Length: 69
Image 1: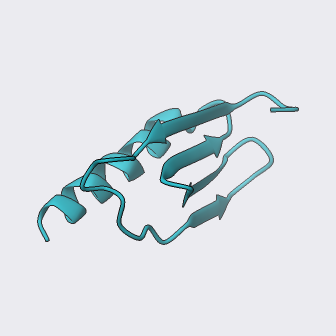
Image 2: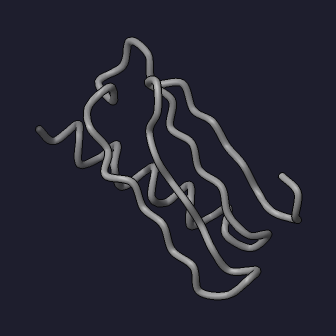
């Protein structure tokens, strides 16, 4: 990243999470933002320096909702 923040990638290949994920983009301020999406069976989340917990929580909530199907 070209600015301070987080970028995570989680491989979803051969998991029950290969299903559709509606991307999320939140821009509150220049330092409080996040983008989450799935591309090529990889969950990608990026965000400001204080948004790692929120990115992980989005991923966790999505995994729970997929596994309930």
